[in-house]
Image (cartoon, rainbow, N blue to C red; front, side, top):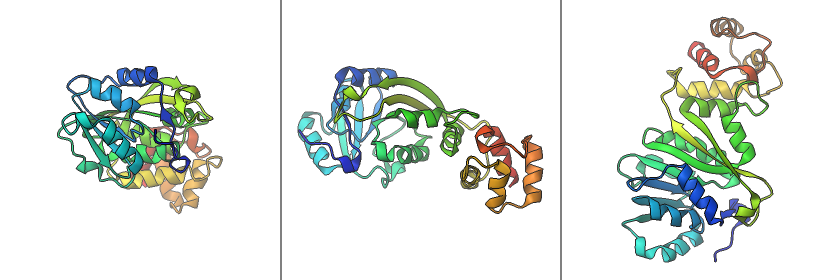
Length: 261
């Protein structure tokens, strides 16, 4: 069996009961096409190929690709396609999939948030994204205004997706055993309730808003170079108090600021 590589943040889900629970939670049906991110040793892949019409697995580790090819050779290429690629560098719009698909993955801990950002590029093609990450990352993804975990990433995910909590997976379900609790959750693409004309500008503004979370939003924006008069006008339009911290500002208010600044 191929060994996990610490440098790649690999922790393989080996408990088959949790693999089946994930596939059931994701709602995978017999006519679905599923794209699996970082299949590792293929424990989750084995359940997916039993359930879905077709699986496309994207794996970075060359040793894993070879092992997966040997394990599932009888199912390739009709039921399973292996793509050897760095998920962070991969051209997601060029995925070898026709039509819509469901995205699944046990995401490497050290690059999980970067992968979630990448998913935005294919949100119009995917039905849902079911993934497993460290529980603290899942809490950041799902956080609401006023909570300690609410930040830039929470706002970004809320803008693009409906965020659904799932279930915890204990360290004992993995090899090697991680030191933290993991959580399975789902993102479902949605049309933004408060669309912004300049998405890059919106992301930049929200990022700058949380540059120093303990400072007020006003001070963060002024430090980022936004003119005082424009900030004042936008705060009035968005009904934002000048003494509020960024963690207490709602998505709709950030969208309003983005349109005005």
